[in-house]
Every structure is written in structure tokens, then in C-alpha cells.
Image (tube, rainbow, N blue to C red; front, side, top):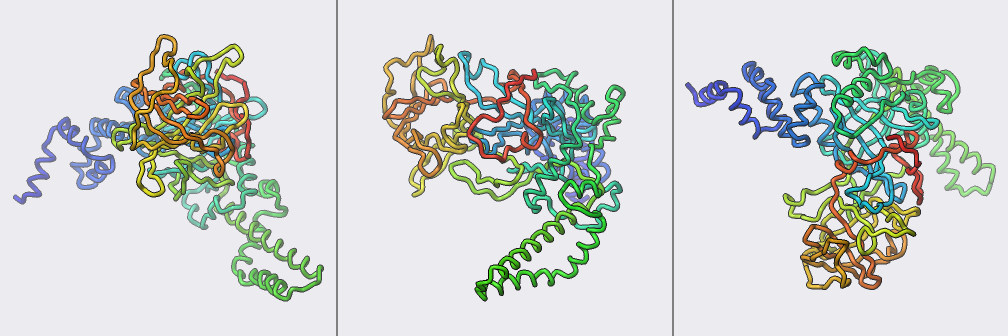
Length: 568
């Protein structure tokens, strides 16, 4: 017998428990590949024990929660599919540039779902960050079906009532860094879907993309079953079943019925075409566009005539006006053609969400963002121990000394959230720790989103003494382990003139970070945060209208998210 055959026989003869232990060293992809080798291996790796182990290997849920989630899904294999394809890529901190106070969405695990929760810019009371109640509002949910597939629900408010807007999950890249809210055309008959090439939604002009999103969200809203982040599995399972029914008779539905999930869509017809600002028959326009598509050279005549008129440098105002009208007409026809081609790929349109990986440039940990896309951008979070970056990650705190002390005049202090990252100096000689602001709880923004609140030379500790003689806060006494010099933002607005002044970062024995400006002795005290735990005991407030709730594109310097209306 050949050695390969002998090894195969040995592998197949292993007890299921032993093979489950071995599978801990394999990825879910490896296990799926094994099932393609032969029928015997397929039967072996399709066991519940193997896929329970794989759910642990993904490392997004503790074992106790994995077992609880299994009650609402067909198998551990289906559960592993949802954890790998949805939960692991999306969980984390997502941001957007606007409004400048901060637009932070933390995506966390719900129950057989992931939930996007927006942190409201707010003040910290006398109880502090850990003991106080964090204000948040729901942005979206992606819920697992009975077979592990994903279904999307956008949160929003309409006429002072909260609604859900169901849609599709188009795709989720495993290394995604941008989350896009889009509209997707669909066919009723699957076999007809490949008839025409889909024109990408992202390439449509902003005005058309915005109109489509607003039109769809204006038709597909459903009353919201109450959302809670507390650990009540029975209520969470019941709510999930209601969501997957999507507006039907929720009271009589089994888990298997979830497979009939069909979000509400908007028909592609003459009425939709008129709402988008175009008159006439939609299908008739399709014929006209096809003719234009076969005679694209004729479009170039408009551009050539425009260029010729410029080269002639004609003094005739009428001539230049005529050329401008021709160019505007050409641009309008191209826009009309692209929109019609996009819509012609389906019989109806519905909301969709797509998580992609794109090439992003960044400055001091803050990504460069597209101003006209309904998108959220993921901030990378390093694992401190594995990456040798012990201070990397999300921190929160307030200004003032002693930390957390409030007065009658100021019962609360503005909450600041910072993402700490490591960088090299421009000449490569120094290792820097950068504290990038992603949220501030002031009434009017002090520093734009993405500002570096401080930059310190983390590779060169000093023996500097803390500037305050009294290092006690109530019964707590601070002892300092090390100090790093650098500079911090003191005044000025914007990235070009932030007004940096010398300062020092002190590290306490209990893991607090205190950045002190030398000139003014202003103190920013930071502590590492577990947003998931803070959100579970926080207070939910009403969201914004659906599209604005996903991405607030308008530049604003005030707190647009603090409606003051509490929902739970």
C-alpha cells in the first residue's frame, strides 16, 4: 500500500472527537476543501462537532454564545458561514468625516446578527465613563437567516416614528475598509438576471444616487420591533423572527419560514422614472438609449465642435452660448443613458449594503474620505500584545484635573474618543504614538474630525515629573510609571494650522494615559474602553432619517445626532 493511501486510511479511521481537535489547526476554508476530496471525508467534516470547533476558531464569539446562537440556525456550519462572511469582517469602529464633532459607528455582535450603533457626542457626568450610561442610536442591522445567509435592515426615523428599511447584502469583503449604502436592481426571475450588464451604482452622478436612495427609503419603511442590546436571548430570537418576516404576519412563523424573506422593493416603471426627474415612457427611453449606444461617435461631434469654437476664439457671445448649450445637452444625455442602463438591469430596485476593500490614503491614522458617497470607513485596530503596540486602540476621556471632577456650573465634561496608532517620524528615526480624535462631546466643535490631539515620541521615555503636586483623586492616588515627550493640539482649527504646543504623556500604574500641555497645564486623561460593554448598559436615542442616519454628508460643526428623544 502506498504511503498516501495509508495516511488517508489513518485519517479516515480517526474518532470524530480526535478529528475535531485536529481541525482546530485548520481554517473553515481548509475544512470545506477537505469535504471536496471524497464522500467519506465530506461526511466526516460535515458533523456538528467539527463546525462547532470552527465557530470557535473564527474567534468572534465565546463558546457560550456560540451554543446559544445555534438555537436559531440550521447547523453550526451555517452559523460558521455567518461568522466568517459577516461578523468577523464588520465588527469594529467605523467613522465618517461629517459632522466634525464625530460620526462613530461601532459594529458589534447582537443575537444571530451584527448591529451598527452610533455613539452620540455627549458629556460625561459625575459617575464617569465606566459607570455612566452611554447615549447611542441604531444605524443598521445585518441578521442571519436560518441557513446562515445575511439580510440587511437600515434604521431611520420618519415623522417622529422609528422605522426599519429592509434590503439586500450585496457583498462583504473579508478585509473590507468601506461600507456603502446603495440601491440595487433585481430581476424577479433569476435566470433572466444575466441578460444585461449592470451599470455600477457608484458611477452614477451624486444627484441620481441620492434621489434613488431617498425614493426607495420613502417606500420600504416598516415599524420597528424594539431593539435592545441587553442579553435577553428569548426576546432577541422573537425579534429576529419578526424582522425576517419583513412586514408579514409575524405572529405565526417558524424558523423554516424565514427562507421566504423578501424585502420590500420599488417597481422600475414610468412612475419611478418621472420621480427621478425624467419624463416620457421608461421603456421607450430604453430604445432611444440603445440607438445612442450604437452611435457613440456622433456624441464626439458635440465635443469636437465645442473644442473648435474655443480654438477659434470667437468673439460672438451667441456662438459660445450655443456651444455651452450643446455641451450641457450632451452631458444630460450621457447621464440619462447611464441611469437608464443601470435601471434596465432589473424589474425593481431595493436597498443594499456592500462592504468593500479599496485603496485608502490616510494622515495620522485618519482615512481620506469621498465626499459624495453614502459610506462609512473602518479604522484598523491593532492587537497591542501581538503587534508590540501596547497603547494602540480605542481610548476615551475628558479634559481637566483632577479627572472626572464636575462642578455645579459644569455638571458634565465633554467626552473625547481617540484612536491611538503608531507611526514612524518623517525621517524614520523616531517611533511616534498618535492620538487621533474621532469624537468630541462639546456643543460646538473645537477640532475637526481626524485631528491629532497629541503626537509623542514613544521610543524615548524621559524622567519628567508630573506637574501637579496633588496626585490624588478622592481616595485614589496616581503613581506614574513612565513619561514621553511630544506635542499636543492647543488652539487653532484645521489640519494645516492646528496650533501644536510642547507636552508630555504620562502613563499611570493602572493603565491611564494623561497628556499634559506644558504651557497651560491642560490635562487630557484617557482610559481604554470596551464599547460593547458600555453600549449594553447605555441609553438608546432616536436615529436620524434613514439616509442621513447611515452617512451624514453635510458639513456641520454642531451635534446633529442629539435629538434628546430617548427610546429606551
